[in-house]
Amino acid sequence: MTPPLADRTQICPEALDEAKRSQALAAYDVDSLRGEAALKQITDFAAHLCGVPVGIVSILDTDHQTFLARTGVPEGPEPPREHSFCGHAMWGDGLMVVPDATADPRFATNPLVTGDMNLRFYAGAPLISDDGFPMGSLCVLDTVPHPEGLTALQREGLTVLAANVLARLRDSRDVAVRRASVRRARTAAADSETRFRVLADTMPQMVWSTLPDGFHDYYNARWYAFTGVPEGSTDGEAWNGMFHPDDQARAWAAWRRSLETGEPYDIEYRLRHHAGGYRWVLGRALPIRDARGAITRWFGTCTDIHEQKSTLEQREIVSQELSHRIKNIFSVVAGLVHLTGRTHPELAGLLGELRQRITALGRAHDFVRPHSEQSRPTLRQDSLHGLLGELFSPYQLPGSERIRITGDDVTVDDRAATPLALIFHELATNASKYGALSVPDGHIALTIATEASDVVLHWCERGGPPLSGSPAQAGFGSQLIEMSAARQLGGSVVRDWPAAGLEVTARVPQVAFSR
Image (tube, rainbow, N blue to C red):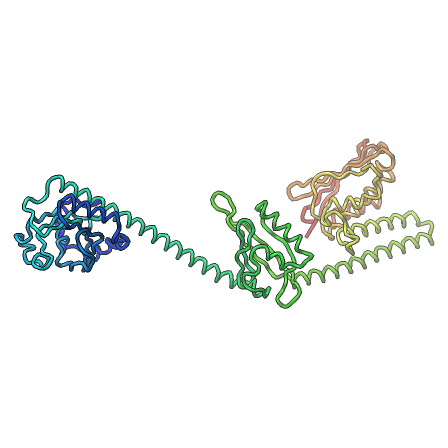
């Protein structure tokens, strides 16, 4: 707020902190108003209104004055501040009118009065900043005295015109503030960009970014060091040409899907290397969103994983070779058991059951650890549903699912596959001999449920021969089930023999299914 005029008259140039006044004045973009047509119109009208030849908008800084607009005064240097009438007018509590400067003790010896200018009449309206600092005045001059001074209309008009000058000054200040804000924002953005580039160039990964539509417009130094291509040569869709030909379609399809859905980009592909050939990299990207959720940019990285990929491939080759040998061992042992049964007919039944158990173990092992791509199962290798489906396949009939598996799927590894294969091989074999699978209309439901930290597997036979209670004694198969569930999996088994068919509930800790 501008201080009341009565208060302002108590301030004199000697008492005012000139540095603060100069600082306040600097907030106005005064230079941008010099010679402005709108101000020139004001000085023209002020001179015409007051019936004098000269009108001036004068701004006074610490040691000089500046004419922002002038009428009736030729272009040239402004008078020194110490000679300025406006330097007095801007301290007044309203218009300062000097009818005859030669009769005023303040100005009688002023060079502007005694010199070539021959100034006689002066009237000036002070220009006061919003925070109360005098800045200058809008004044009118004449080389002849005006004993009558100004009429009421002229005084009011000059005051209104001065208010218009202040409005133009405020506009210049606001523009200056906006320009300064823009400069600061640009400087901050440039600093941020510099920091980002320094950070990105020191990262071990290749860093890139795209526009929302996927147009690649930035790569860090690591990208160019890895690929060896000229800077800017992979902008836009040229990026796709850096992939191995066999990976291009797959990588491009995954990228387009991420652009369409906003889902993170995550893929492994082979990228052209500056030394020749291609190296495996892991490509990842995440979208940057604004407050409304709209994607404004994508930032991504490429990480060289060639050594890790090669190591994993070598391990897979070794794993498949070991799996192949283990499967051969199962086959050799099953063959030995078969030969033993032929030379000892009295043991044929027992040895046949043993050979079936060995075969079941071999099938379970080959499911979780396939020895070749050809033997790899179509279902997930860590799927309990898939493992059990593989074990039960010999007992199913075309077009009829005699053993139905429902409920939760559980991740299973090779350590748990062996005891699980033994448990359910025994149950299926017994069902085919004595239970539900021994008759055409019998069927079995196996339900899997996750309860807290346990997995509960419920085996329920229906449609088989009616039962008359539990058997008198447990056979070897029952003992094998108990041993597999309790000792190897750390669980428990409960059997029930209702007349409708056998029910078995196995409760196994979930941690026993996979490492």
